[in-house]
Image (cartoon, rainbow, N blue to C red):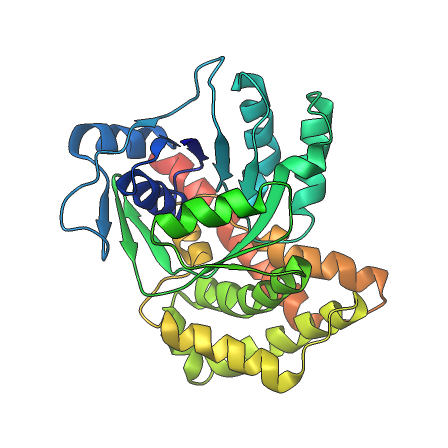
Length: 311
């Protein structure tokens, strides 16, 4: 199967490497520095292979590219631009595995596909939720931090994606209500990412005070939004899942912290910002979420200024 992995960051690189090692024809599309390193030395995946994976990589797709399937692994804030680039470059529509964090992913992606003339755009999309801990270490190198799985929602190509990922050694589980799983992960992300990014700590520090209390406050504000949207999670269920992830990824630096360190945009708006917007619609007060959104936005702006000054 010819598979384009668009967004070769941490999870995109890992999935691309696994698919390539399983014998699939893979093309990674990523940032120029990452692509250059992969082309010169191969893709190093710590925790997966002791040798670099010689997976093909490119900084951009050539017009008329053909693909049997697409793995769309860009961050949520890059989704619209990435989707437009894909629809412009592809020779024909293909099934898309959308593996972003955040809400409204299918709607945003469907709108771009419809605008590009894809017939029945929603049927091309399979929504996925990832819990595999993987870190982008630097150009040409990612680190697998432990076990996890990819959850797949219903879609026209759900079976095909489940088969090809399982063949590549990825733990896959199909679920009938993917939106609930999207919210489940959103609760965890809303608790872990902002606190670790704000205080520059690894995930495991959230098991102790004062970070534990801050994470729990954010978790329970997020729970109130999920409940208002029709997705109930008990306090015990949500806290168990939060600290399961905290302990399983204790040595990890969250993706939001990594983005701040690199001077890149963060997913604060797709995660906590989206919760604030939904909270306003339901007349909910979310003081801790509002506070941390302001702080992360300010830190991100400072980082961009610092990067510009250092250039």
